[in-house]
Image (tube, rainbow, N blue to C red; front, side, top):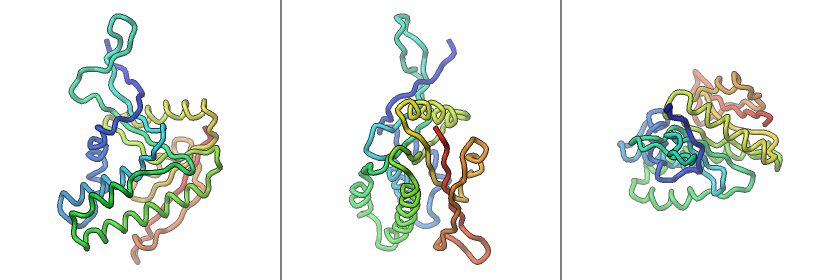
Length: 212
């Protein structure tokens, strides 16, 4: 039987697998490997709110003969993850950061705080554009081709059925922001983030939305 995929609540034990995907893309230009991973894990955790809108896509073996769906026994069934945030949702990342950052030097913590300032600003800009019946896509990550689009499609159906009206997200010029324009998202705000800009090139940020 061809393996399918099952949408499930995100299991925090799979967080290191999410970090593995984005580490080559988001690692800061300073510090050793331990610090780089710490900083990227902070970014991931910053996008995981304390709510029930945390999903993962798991490779599915099909049925066990009784009609019940079972997760495959393959050693690495984790395919993708998607995290959403409502206005007012809390996030536990700051408690984690204060504990985990203590092992690094003052200089490295200052470098990490540049990421914290940027993420906080962009999250606030996005949430301020949202109505109470809108929801934000904080992060989605794919470990296999096509899995990202699949988890986004499935979760958007759930959100629409629950009455959420629009899906918002933000991204920047370091990411494949053009993907969103090709998949039905409308660009609603474009800015330059001066601390990351140079004389030669502005560091662009983008906020998108899409009707659910």
